[in-house]
Length: 342
Image (tube, rainbow, N blue to C red; front, side, top):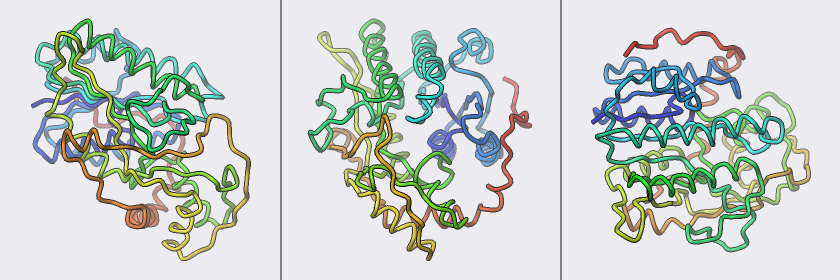
């Protein structure tokens, strides 16, 4: 089995690749290694994958169709796990065109690639809990309306879902869109609150807490997310004459936790109190996320096992162990030294 993973140098992409490789699958990982956050952090993740003989990495931008086609040649992938995207809600206020290029054009290019893959069994792609906007109906269910996004990021992810529905209808491409709920864990993203809080507390700097701390998130440990992705892989939707082979699934912990509780766990793990500066709600932020995961549970038996009381101390332990290395990470675009030719 050969799997294409886009966004292979990213947080979830790295963990997905490693899990697939550990299962003995052949993996081709692609990533454009953009500088939204430290390129060296992404390269550090890839260096952990490089020893696997069944892994091949190629630097390429998924939004550039000709480059992608030329790079991959005539591939024969059984599965595609499409995780590449421009992440971040606040950054979309600064650089909206990055989201149009990566999230919309990039998704379209991957759909076109999949349309011409003769052996494709299943395309799994990343969506987001952000598509629900500020829905007051909790827990958030796949059957809820998702047509009122309050951030550009959310609008692009919902648009991806609609593009996928169209392509599944037209070309019968089996697809599953996974709406991720606040993923955290080792080798995570430096722009996420749990990372920034941990780093600032360790450095003796204040942390900025939005909406005066009155926010809740369905924090989902990365190992649980990977377990969910793998459980879905071999269960492609079939569709019928009246419906396309496309579905949307929530994947979360189904336990909304307050921001203040999250900070308290980090403080306890660090044995250090945070200097907290309260700020108003930021544009594009939602008040609460809380996933209804009954659909993925019914399909695969998915059961998240890691509470934040367990998962956050694991992240803190990892962060402390890598702190010196992380502080040395430059913000540059050095060439990846181990790209294997096809």
